[in-house]
Image (cartoon, rainbow, N blue to C red):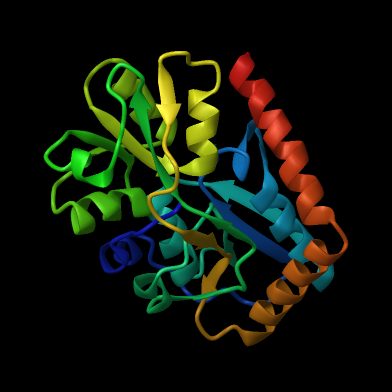
Length: 245
């Protein structure tokens, strides 16, 4: 995800003070990005949730998770409304100016979702076309910065793909995992190979070295003991089942 936001504007909306030491670690996310985060009824579940829960356990604290629109995820940690931001967040140089990032925990990238009746061949084919994206993501940035045009913005990859199916856009650009989830069971749709290479990491407010150390240690531990691989498998399977319903 992936994602870029207008930090100064959003932070002014989400104003707040730096969090005081408490017995709770609060995670902020955007729960429409399976298998990393999604709603299981009213519960927020997914790979990112388990990573942040493990951080809270390492610190000996309670865990709390809240979902907001993606554009508000990083501003929430900048303003102190949350301790951790994890929502399939792509590490970018622009974001590094505003937050500190953990070590990456997955390598990924963005792809093109297209109708088989209008197959995607190469990036040049995207120029001048109406392209759907999730607002605030690196998919949006790709369209504005690389293609030098304005995309059709949606609140989620699923909403963007719905626009594609309805013929309101010609292509959709999204992260590989939600793209796979959106295409599953859709005979008319397909996805391309990666058109970019990205890494996801946990974001926190600058100036919290002890928290950053705990996150990095947790990421190393869950990779080494197999928990991360287990969560990827389990939540991918669960997200697939939810798609089938």
